[in-house]
Amino acid sequence: WASLRRGLAEPTRHIGWVNPFRGGGEDSRPAPPEGWEVVRHSRTSMLVHAGEAQLPQPSRTHGLLDHYPLDGGSALAALALEPRRGERVLDLCAAPGGKTLFLASELAAGGVLVANEKVASRRARLRRVLESYLPGPVLRLSELAAATRLADAKLHVALADLDATDARALRALPLDFDKILVDAPCSMERHFLHGRADSPWTPKRIARDAKLQLNILKAALVALKRGGRLVYSTCSIAHEENDAVVDALIAKTAAPAARSPRRLRLDDPLRALPPFLTRHAERTDRGAILLPDRSGFGPLYVAVFVADLELPTDADHRTVPPPAEPAAA
Image 1 (cartoon, rainbow, N blue to C red):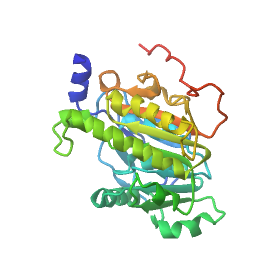
Image 2 (spheres, rainbow, N blue to C red; image 1 turned 180 degrees about the vertical axis):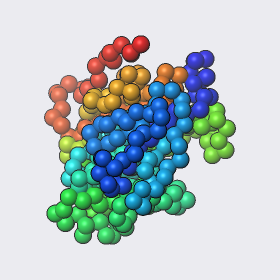
Image 3 (cartoon, one colour; image 1 turned 90 degrees about the horizontal axis):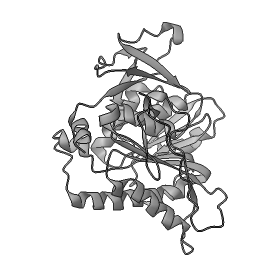
C-alpha cells in the first residue's frame, strides 16, 4: 500500500493520441518530439515516452489539433473495446473526450460513433474536443438515422445528452450498437490525493458509486446488439467499484427470474494490446488494472463483457481470463 499511495500521489504519466484526420498523409507528418516514440496499434497511433517527460502543447495542422495528451491508462479502456470499420459504437460516459478520440481513429475508415454526456458543462467540453480534432460536423441524434443510411466509408459522429442510467432513453435511440464503452463515474482516489476540489472521497461514496455504476451497465445492455462487446472501466482502486460491480451485473443477468435483454460472459481485456500497457497491467478475478506505482498510468480498471453467446449449463457461466505472464523486468 505504501508504494501504491506514493504512485497515486505522483504526477500522472501521459501519452499522446496522434490525430489521423489532419490530412497530408504519413509522409507529411512531423517527427515525434525528442525522446518520444510513435506506437501504432490497429488504426491508432500514440506518442509514448519511457520516462515522465511532458508532451508539448497540441498545435493545429490542416485546421485540426495534432495530438491529445491523456493518461496512458485511458488507451487501455478504449482499445479493449476493439472497434472495427463499419460498426456502431457508443461511448456512454464520454467527457472529456480522450477515449472518444481513440474510438474515432479506430473507426476512421467508416462507422458510427455516439458520444454521450448528460452534464451540460462536461458536454460542452466534449463538443470542443470533438470539433478540435475530428473532421466534419458533430451531428445531433436526430440527424444520425439519416447519416447511417449512407453507404459511405465515412465516420459519422453524434453527440447525445442522455442519462446513462435511463434504459428507456437508450432503448429509444435510433440504432443499437456493436460496441459500448462505459467509463463510469467513480471515486477517483488519485484525483482526491492530488487535491482536486471536484473529487471528494468518503467510504460512503464508494457504495454510492458502485450502485450508480451497476445501474449504468444494466441500462447499457438494452442498446447492445446480440454478440456485442461492452467494456466497463473506472479510475478507482476499490474492489467494490471494480470486480464486485462486474459480479453483480453477471448475477443480475444470469438469475432465472432476470428480465435482462442480454446474457453475458467475460472476455480477456488485455488480448493483443500494446506491450507498453499490458506489461504493467495486473489481472484481477474479473478483469485487469493498471496501477501508477508500476506504470505511472491510471489507476485504470477494465473488464470486458460479450453479450448473448452460448452459455454453459452449469450455474457459473463466467469466463475468467488466464493468469498473467510475468511482468517484464
